[in-house]
Image (cartoon, rainbow, N blue to C red):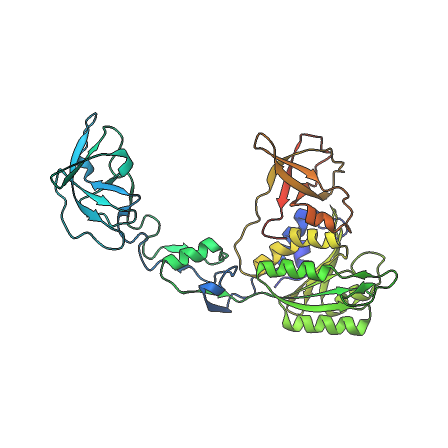
Length: 427
């Protein structure tokens, strides 16, 4: 395990007082490692949503298990098709889904077949019933297929074309989405092996922070950050240890950090890391662990602390509500995913046309709350939510993404395209 000094020494241009967003993520990629590689469990599918796979899920069967029809129609041997000639065939029976048709289909004959029904070995093509002309006489039904509308193999699903027996249906590190649950169930598997949930302890700091239920007092604010972080962590599938509000008192802070380090894989705090704030939180971080204090070239969310206390990774976030969410999305979430053993990649940013001018100084990354919508021509457009103050919590509700103005980027004119980090699935 590398020390913070070793990680910093390997990072080109590392300056804790002026770190770029990319440098922060590069540092965290070295700091955090998967923590649950040897701790996994089997869970039933109904309990597996959002969990991270600990091992590949190999298909025990071919999917589909047989060559079958992709639609309702008539199955036949396509060798009988002739260019520019219609083909007439006699219907000799009906194949239903769920069982093999027991008869035989000869040249000049076809089989009425339902979607998903097994194709007999000598039949390779299905013509949709709406493409055919049907005629019946003396209990004999015939179909006529117009010329040049089919080729061999049309409307046929091949055995194993989705998955071959023994093939990995899902890879270790994948998150189990609703679609993934359905895929596992289609293989006849009732459970999957997943990593244990990541344990994350969280508390707010500051004498000015009120818990819900406390009486209002002058100069104090109710703690919103705990509830936001709880939601962010819960959506990630973490096991959350809510440790409440910890006062700016050394004994209380030391007890909180010690308990968190003993029980959690990661510790998240908000408040107490800015220049000019009371030094108790920072002093206790320094006393108990290997911690770096950063000024990041970003807005909002400039101050941040990272490091280790015992075996726990520490993320000390700023106190302003919007800054907490932005730094969580930009830095903490990717780091926690890595700790969870997840192979998930950051969601690609969308490009949208900006509906208003944005002022921006080169040399820092800015995250502005925005609302993305579709223009009349179907392209994406984005506007800001208005006041971008880091305490304007309502803007995170009004917006559906963060307009990301990159480090080297300058002012944005109306009509310029910008990157947007969408909230869906995160906030």
